[in-house]
Amino acid sequence: QRMPEESTRQIAARLREGVLDPMKQWFTGKDEIIDLLGLCLVGGENLFILGPPGTAKSALVRELGLRIHGRTFEYLLTRFTEPNELFGPFDIRKLREGVLETNTEGMLPEASIVFLDELLNANSAILNSLLTVLNERVLRRGREVIDLPLLTVVGASNHLPEEEALQALFDRFLLRVRSDNVPDEHLAEVLAAGWEMAAKENEERPSPVSADEIRTLQKALPSVSLRPALNAFVAMVRRLRTAGIPISDRRAVKLQRLIAASALLCGRSEANISDLWVLRYIWDTEEQQELLRSVVDDVIAEPAKESDSHPLARNQGLPDPELLASEIETVTSTLEGTETGDPQRAIARDRLTLLAARSQWIRNAEQRAFVNAKLEAAWMLAGDPEEAA
Image 1 (tube, rainbow, N blue to C red):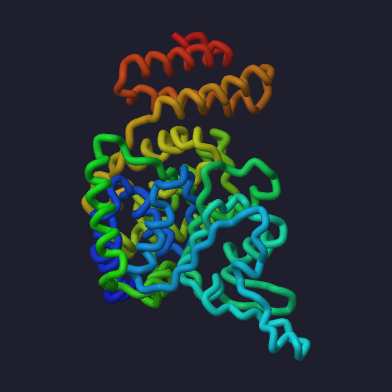
Image 2: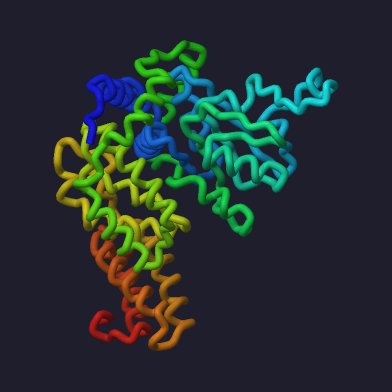
């Protein structure tokens, strides 16, 4: 494997220290999202942010664009949004000559970073075009084919897709993360940071790394050796599939880019097992977050202690009792709807084992007892009284 050039490592260091770290100082409680934005930027993948309005989703993307001096395009989608509003209108002068050519000035096709708020409002008129934009970085309109300078697309919504037609769109966002209001104890910090940001809103940001240099990092990804992490990655994908988390071959292949991006952001030319932290963020439902974390953290716990691991690899978060309880209820419903010998029961049992291991880390005794009671009831349905005991 060819080693990345030293300048590539320097670009990665400047991105971390000059862009991502200062953003963490401005946006209290948003370190996780900022690190994921940086990862998707380098990995050339898309990020979906789930959360209510007013939780800094668009502000984060806008600030990232300002700090790399890249063109940012943001738009709030509605059910009535038309392709022209995103991609630009057809050029009237060319249209008179019988030529269909899009006037893209100031529109999505010229942007390096795109933010689509209320993404899941996308209608059929723009859906197919968006899919090729997200997956191939190409815009197709009639005979027109436009190669896009896109580095990453961030989509946001306050709910997950319910319609089958939107599932393909959601699937194009390889990583998913929640954005909530920060806890009350950090409210004073949020207010102070927000006031400071408002005062500096019109100031030009320092730009230690450019959009073109980000493209240099993306081109360097194939030079990162994945071999040291490959066996663990294959085993983890198999284990997650066995536990009922659907990971297609296409998604598994794409995840390799993010594993390489994690290594590159850490200044390494080789991936290691700690870089598998990225698999925590491939959930389809919120409840799956705890199941994913139980599998991923079990594998990376020791490697993540190394000084050259990614900050999010070292983030061994505590369980969310509500999400754990909700996932156990989902497993219980599966057990109630199946009979002995059904393959789904084996998957359900495996999920229960993983969730049981995670539940032991709940700090609040009352919450832990509540979750464990649900586990015991589920094990009884699974036909394993010893586990229930």
